[in-house]
Image (tube, rainbow, N blue to C red; front, side):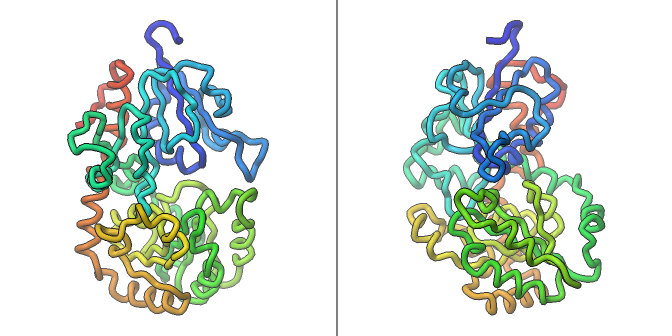
Length: 361
């Protein structure tokens, strides 16, 4: 193990947006020379010779998840449940999650593989309790929030600059289509939806899920959507992995069961859901049908219904505002300040004094 009180941290991820969830926390910790980072992942499906963390400016050692277990670590940070243990000898094991979608995929018994849980908000805790997986007073619960959304709340996103870079028409509203991963709306009427939307007087942005870009498992959706770009009203395909800057731009979000729908609640703008019955059948035991679910927006089944719902949403964006605000307060704990709490708690778990005087409440 590192000498002189230094600490080893291993971060394991399966998809690029898992790191995006944590990036603001890492940026605060990266300059601390006492912390030695290990980045565990498999190779990317769409770039088979590239390690996932080659996509990001991280310091430390990038390792295969198969090689990770041979080392000892002071702290494991994972935004996903592990298919096999990459850090069996880690002193502390923290589940940090990577989102909170209406599928409630976080509700699994594997939560007990961890020594601490960085909860995103009260809703997540209540769902664990209702499922019988945790007690409300479980000492492993840490109320943190969602660090990746802090920039959405604190004015750090230069939306005007992004609009100029994308060459958006300033006279038109901005609509963001963000389908989720497997069995999502992009696999159903997604391309037809894009075709219909591009004919409307809007700026259309499309942000595909990471899973839709893994060509081993799915069609080449990136190429399919790129083929729709061009013309007077172009489809603007977002090829990065961070959706937050585009949530900050959008006047309306179109999604299905993605965590992005809940994240967009912090904007208090209209949300439209494309129905995905196949995904519901697969995940119906955890799907949220009673609390917030798709009540926070309008659900449509066809491209025709979507066009009409979008016209209504743009004409009256205040519809469902009270419900959206209530849901946001339940789902996200103190948005805008989660990075501070996550950094402070990581130092506490490592039994280190913070490298700076900044402390979370």
